[in-house]
Image (cartoon, rainbow, N blue to C red):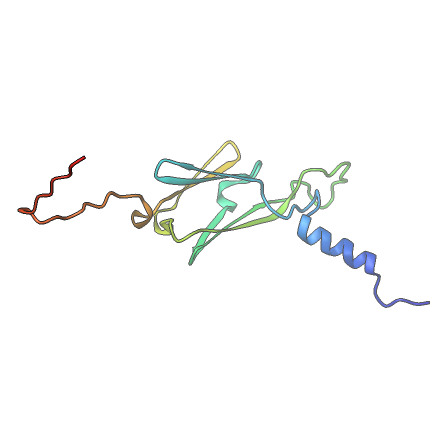
Length: 141
């Protein structure tokens, strides 16, 4: 029987798109934590030039794109290929409690660190209770 589509090939293709392969990973590894009044995100981008990194914020979605070019020239024979290369992309959905206008980025030793300040409206604050100045109540026990 002739099959027009191979379900196993389709499953393999879908798994590669979602999970990635060693030659083309699906996402860059990330750690995230809160440090005082900042939300910090650290992304691993070893061997990536800082000039190829693009950071974009649209609404509450932060997108990081980077590219690691193929170091091998066309006329060179490749013996082993285990290091991922190509275009990497990661999207992070930020909550309304973060100030996306104040995002700061730094890149050191292959780690891209993003510091996103927490919005003033999301910080805890103390609310004073107003009482009439001349009204006193005595609480008896």
